[in-house]
Image 1: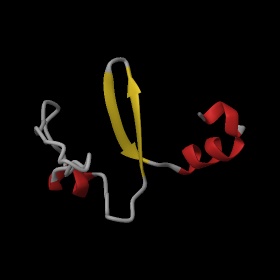
Image 2: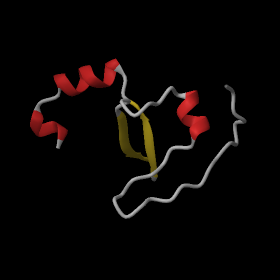
Image 3: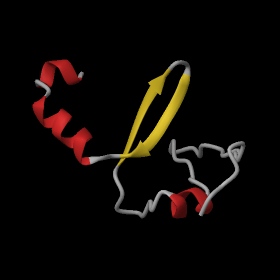
Length: 68
């Protein structure tokens, strides 16, 4: 599924701090309830993306004190 470059949806966080990722995006990125997502700030934006094997290896290789 290809979405237009300017595709966007507005979502609202609920009282538990949860958001719903739009179905088109979940399908496009194959996000399921079991998918781990990485959330981090970057250049004033909040980035949410599926965790990759490379991310997991980086977490394993990072000393605990550096990951805080």
